[in-house]
Image 1 (cartoon, rainbow, N blue to C red):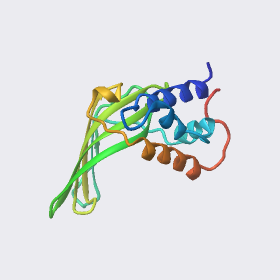
Image 2 (image 1 turned 180 degrees about the vertical axis):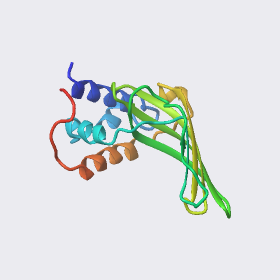
Image 3 (image 1 turned 90 degrees about the vertical axis):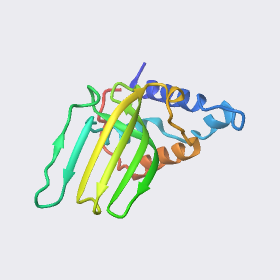
Image 4 (image 1 turned 120 degrees about the vertical axis):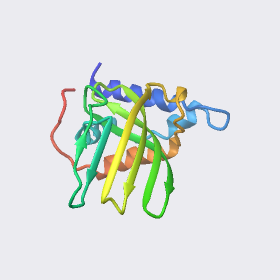
Length: 166
């Protein structure tokens, strides 16, 4: 099976898994109508990044940058983030659950705690893997929002040569 077909299957299964009393699987799959999975995978492939368990960065004079161990063995692409924010006078704190697509076309759910001080003068993030099935974690996926986000990723991406072997 090609990477594109495998990717399409994974994304369709993800949307199908969101069926509930309000929205059946057919309605959720309908959100994917018109998605060019090859273009989406290409766009996501260009966005892949190394995800670290811990990061600290600063823009101030006495600040430093540090990267902890890699969270995954392969680069990943952020598909979705469900963020809860807490803001104080000096710092902004957020807790989020994130859905990552790994380079092997598997999914991972990650929790992220982020603290940003004085308008990004200093920032720290801690991530931990929660699992591979979003339903077994605290991640709440807004599937229409996710579908819109995937469409935006395609629109923002410029056409270019193939980056992976089909």
